Amino acid sequence: MEIVLHALSAVLLALSAWVIFANWWIVVSYFVWRKHASLIPLVGGALGCLGCALSPFPALNGLKWAPLLLDIGSVPVLGNTAIYFAIAYIRRKIGHAPTDDQGDGTL
Image 1: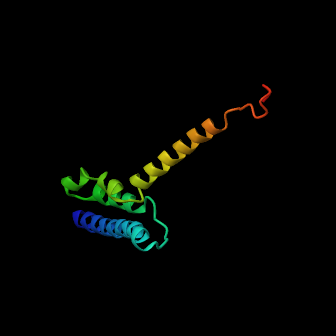
Image 2 (image 1 turned 60 degrees about the vertical axis):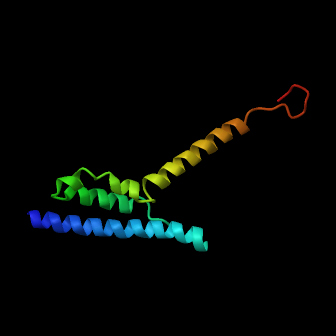
Image 3 (image 1 turned 180 degrees about the vertical axis):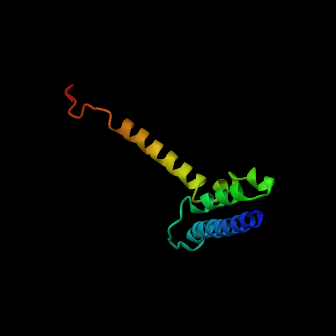
């Protein structure tokens, strides 16, 4: 059974590394060559977390959160998106305050 866990963990971690590398390559290629492509959000981080959790090595079990931080399509992009929408919501609330457009005291 331990051999199966080793093999499954290795496959999941290899797929995770490939997706994480692809996501970072997409970001770098955008900034360097202005090539547009789409990230694969959460997949690399989720595969890495699962691979670490299934690993028979205790050191990898303790690092199951690390792939989510390493994958630009997971925590960094989702955090950035949450901040963007929070700022947009605040700006919308501030920008839509009732104003006296006519100057006569009516709204």
